[in-house]
Image (cartoon, rainbow, N blue to C red; front, top):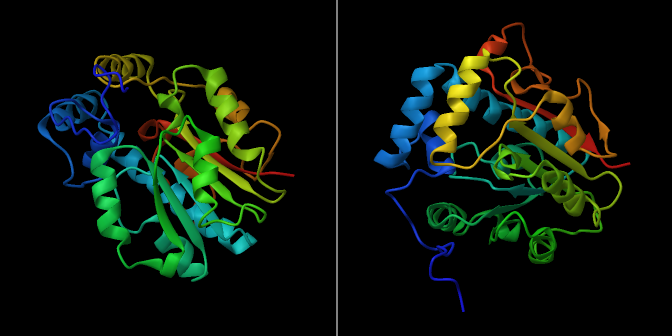
Amino acid sequence: MADPARPTSRELHTDRPHSARVYNYWLGGKDNFPADREVAERVAAAWPGVRTSARENRDFLHRAVRGLVERGVRQFLDVGTGLPLAPNTHEIAQSVDPEARVVYLDNDPMVLAHARALLTGAGGGRIRYVEEDLLHPEKILASAADTLDLGQPVAVLLLAVLHFVPDPRQARALVSRYLEPLPSGSAVVISHGCPESLAPETAQTIAQVYGQSIQGSWASAREIGELFGPVELLDPGVVPVSRWRRPGDFCPPDTDIALYGGVGIKP
């Protein structure tokens, strides 16, 4: 029997802030509620760069996915995908290779409702949504195997989700559990909250605001690099997401970026 004190994945609590909806608000989306907007605005008041950081994380995802498809990786597992916001992972991947396959994963009821609407009739069986907690890689991979060929390279996308895993050791173990069953040539894309570009008082305020309602933690660039384990990091390694293989000359100041990321290839 389910614990009645523990919400199921299908319960929607609009009176409590949720990380996916807060992030949606920073990206200019409309799928959020007053409790989400209150937290989002409190962070923005302390650090106006938060919206830039959220947009740059999204752009990092797009560059990483496009680059991996060009390298020959045509299957993606988008873990903790959050609320859909075009262009989505499958749209980026399939713009390079229409045969690319994507499995989205989340356990939030609002994400589920949007995913069902988004995926209805889309992709010819090459796109799927799995409702599960990111802490269960084995179950997730078993479900994803209906859509992805796990004997061929798969890219695991862990964008702005591992900082909600409270124990760094557990986060490192999770990445390993996702990658271990996958073949050589598979990839992992990670972004994680990192305060190194922020003023210490700003980082502290953000942590306090989040700590009152949403579980989360910072990590140093070195600690984020350790999440990748033995995979081979692509250049330029773990950097502010705005700097990862960014085209052109313009780049927002690092003080507007609190997410560091990188892409690794399994040997």
